[in-house]
Amino acid sequence: MTVHPSRIYALNHIQEHPAPVIYWMSRDQRVNDNWALLHAQERALALGVPLAVVFTLAPAFLGATLRHYGFMVRGVAQVAADLARLAIPLILLRGNPAEELCRFVLGRPVGLLVTDFDPLRIKRRWREQVAGQLPVACVEVDAHNIVPCRVASGKQEFGAYTIRPKIRRLLPDFLDEFPSLKIHPFPWPEPVPPFDLQRELAGIAVDHAVGEVTGMLPGEVAAREKLGEFIADRLDDYNERRNDPCADGQSGLSPWLHFGQLSAQRVALEVGRELLFSPSVEAFLEELIIRRELSDNFCHYNDSYDMVAGFPAWGAKNVAEHRHDRREYLYDAATFDRGETHDPLWNAAQRQMVRDGTMHGYLRMYWAKKILEWSPTVAEAMAVAIGLNDRYQLDGRDPNGYAGIAWCMGGVHDRAWGERPVFGKVRYMNYNGCKRKFDVAEYIRRNG
Ligand SMILES: Cc1cc2nc3c(=O)[nH]c(=O)nc-3n(C[C@H](O)[C@H](O)[C@H](O)COP(=O)(O)OP(=O)(O)OC[C@H]3O[C@@H](n4cnc5c(N)ncnc54)[C@H](O)[C@@H]3O)c2cc1C
Image 1: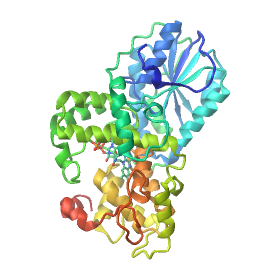
Image 2 (image 1 turned 120 degrees about the vertical axis):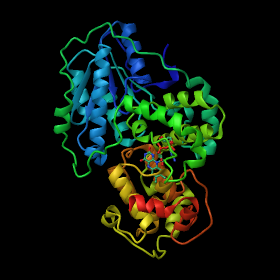
Image 3 (image 1 turned 135 degrees about the vertical axis):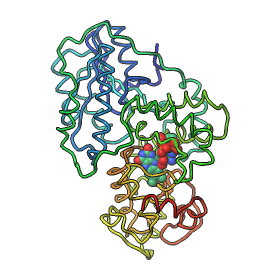
């Protein structure tokens, strides 16, 4: 068997049968290094049947804008072209994903539906709807995490220190090289119109106010180039430079990882080949594997991952105890959005995100903690931070974002610190701390 059996999770109790196989591609939008697609082909070959990939284009997905749809649709166009070389069609459906997929499958013989894993609520609802309504075997394959989320742990973990030993113990079982896909020998029985990128881009009915970013090319090829360039030029110094927003010391891979155009497992395999046991490799793999998979764990096991209700008990108590604390500055969502606070560093970080679709990791923490400090309530701070993060960051709408914001505001995956106004026991950050870490004036000059 090509795919580790623990990666595969049955979504209903129906048995597969010899009829065409469909891979409903959702979170993992790539051809290479994709366990879900590999499993779909393996079953199709075993059953001697055709295989198709279906992609459902949802209108206005969680507030996504042209910035996100453009990146995604251009990536999917490359997927369609690469699949065509393997004689596997990509079928594009538009509209409510669960409804459109059910309509499509009910209209033809299908022996197995494979999809990928995503812990977000809306994706879970779609999967449940599809698996509940279709008289077809439906399975999910975790193609995003190296150690599958359901396998790494059966419960919400307290923090990196509790999930780390579990993941480390299981890594040797899952961190294996990917096999290649084969040219599929059983042709799809219907004609499939070619993917028309210009038509799809022109037809996207989403918010065009946030435009596409230049400088980050979508798709698997660009992702691999970015990875190669990071390993060659910056990985060596990752540990020293990653917390300096002026230094370009991070990998910059999160947009491609978010859209599934790059597999985290591929990144780990390539990085692991380079500088075994260096502090930089260790620090990078801690973020890529432990922190990233901890975020999936949080969203999978905590339905309130984007709300105050998702905080740990001490974080929720903290919110209640400090709800009447006086805030020195108060801003509404529009002022935050325009980057017009009294703090030039915060404004510069906000402007970088609006302009470039990304913000340095260290500043993301400062940025969210200041929204907490300058909002009337924690609930409003959460809503503003999530709203802006998901609107402007190319990697927004990701478990990493929901976990990161809950970490900043509610102590998720963190411990209690010294008591202070507004923050209570939640870890505090300030301007002077940033000045000690990096050249704040230079950062403001570049982005203000
Ligand atoms: C308030 C806040 C909001 C955030 N919003 C997002 C978001 O919307 N999308 C997103 O992908 N990440 C988010 N993060 C996590 C982290 O800041 C980014 O993943 C990282 O800065 C992306 O840059 P990079 O790819 O160069 O990271 P690198 O430092 O090169 O790390 C490599 C990869 O490891 C993972 N990673 C790194 N740091 C973290 C972390 N703290 N938690 C989980 N995974 C991590 C990411 O997949 C990242 O691409 C957020 C963090 C905070 C504090």
